[in-house]
Image 1 (cartoon, each protein chain N blue to C red):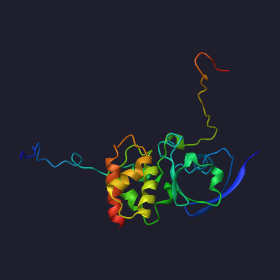
Image 2: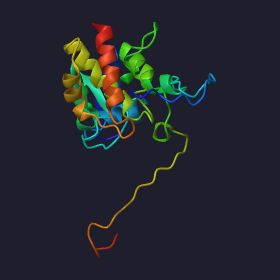
Image 3: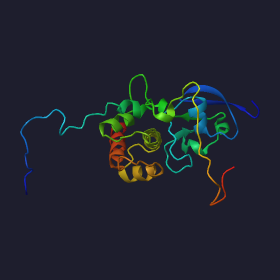
Image 4: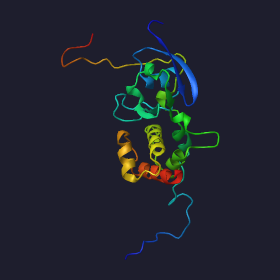
Length: 157
Length: 59
């Protein structure tokens, strides 16, 4: 195939090699090349946060990052949060607080919230609301999501 | 203060409870399969081709 680039990256702690076109977004690579469909496509233009992934310690909208930029980077997606021991405390808190309905925004919210709680353990409600401003949810009205993250924040302290 | 009105003393199994959604674990782990997450052999994709402006038609 002309114009494809080989990229080596680390996704959820596992080395991955993939081929992609220079125009393809990281979101397209995750979903259409690697078939990791846990990361959702909402708006595909950086407004909704559904495709949020952790990219070398920063949260990014994967629809705004090119696949080729992943070279040598460490990426964490929603698929990398639960372990053999069970769900991540944030995932558990989302379930217990009924913080999801349709679930399309949920992976993005959880990945974003995890980055906050790792950076600022015990973050308060104001901080959580500010941090999650880049993630849109059309089902829950946000309150239950914020409560879930607060709950996880307290449990993870 | 007005006390809550008790409509029924009957213990319900579902009403008044907030059970964990049966599809919840799949949704918080990214395992849930939505329409766009499914790839089938020979799957055809469609795309809307719109006119670039009013009255300009589509080639």
